[in-house]
Length: 390
Image (tube, rainbow, N blue to C red; front, side):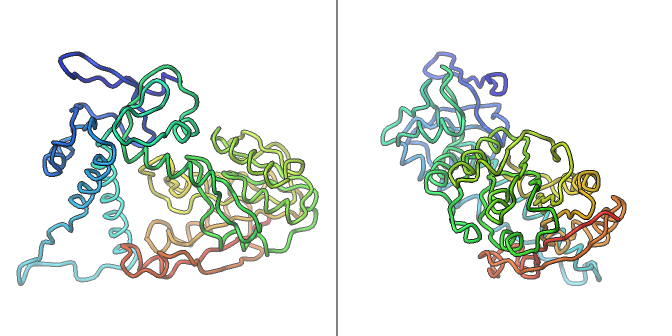
C-alpha cells in the first residue's frame, strides 16, 4: 500500500519533516510551506499560483475560509480580449467545432481550479486524525476511503478531505433510486447513480427471451443496474468491475437490498466468462481524459470502454440475446464523437441495432442556461440501444 503513496518532505521549525502524500487526483507539490491564520488570502493565491503547497497549521475552520477566499479569486472571470475593428475573424465555424472548443476551455478551467485549490493541505496523524483547533473527527470518513491506518502520518489537500467527508455522508445516507424503490449507498471513488433517467430505461425495456435465467452487468460500480435486473426477476446476474472499491461497494449494496443470492460480483476486465441472453453496459459517456479518479465513471478517453464493449459483445451473447448499451449523446453535441462513428463501431463488431429507447435527462444542469455547456446539455438525449449479433 505504501508504495502507492510517496513521501512528501519539508522543513519546519528548523527540522526536516516527512509524511505520506495522499491524493488520487494530483501530484505532490514540489515546494511545501507551513502557514497559519496570519497568512492572507492574497499571499495564498500568489503561492499556489506559483506551485507551492500550503500546509495549514492554523484553526481548521479558518482554513476552510481561506479555501473559500481562494476559490473566489480563482473563479474571477478572465479578462476577455476583444479584437480591434477590422481584425480578421473566423467567418464560419460549424456548431460541433464551437461546442468542442467550449468544452475544452471548460475542462481546462476545471483542471486549473482543481490544481490551485488542491494546494491547501492538511496533515493527518498515524491514526487518521487532524491535530488542528476546531478540526472535526474525520477518522471514520478517512478510513472508509484510505483503509485502516498504517502507522504513517499523511498529507492531503483540504479540498480532497472535504470530498472524503461528503462521500462518507453519501455512503451513510444513501441515494434514493426511484426505479428500485430503494436506496443505493455509494462509496468514496465509486460513481453515485444521481441521474435516474438511464435506470428508468433499463427498468422499462422488454427483456429478451432467456434473460430471466442469466444476465451480465459490465462495469457494475455501485451495483445499481445488477440490483435493478434482479428486481425485474432475472434469476442470476453476474456483475463485473475491476476497481476493488466498486466490487466491495456493489457487494455491500446488493446484500443490503436482499439481492445477494441472485447477483454474483466478480473482478473482471469487462466481460465475465461465458454467454448470456442479456448483457448490459453503461460506459462513461464523454470521450475525454479525466481530471480526477472519480471522473473515470464519466470520462472515457478515446471511447476505449465503449469500443471494448462493442468489440466483445457478440462473443458473449447467447443466440437471440441482446446487448443493452446505455449512452447519452452529449459527446455528439460537444463535437467529441459523431453518431456515424458509433454506428460504424457497432457494424464493425458484427452487431446491428434492433431497437432504441430514448429519454430526456432531468438533472438540473440540463435546464440551467448559466451552465458553460448548456447549449449541448439542452439537446442531450439518453438512449438504451438494443444490440443483437448479425
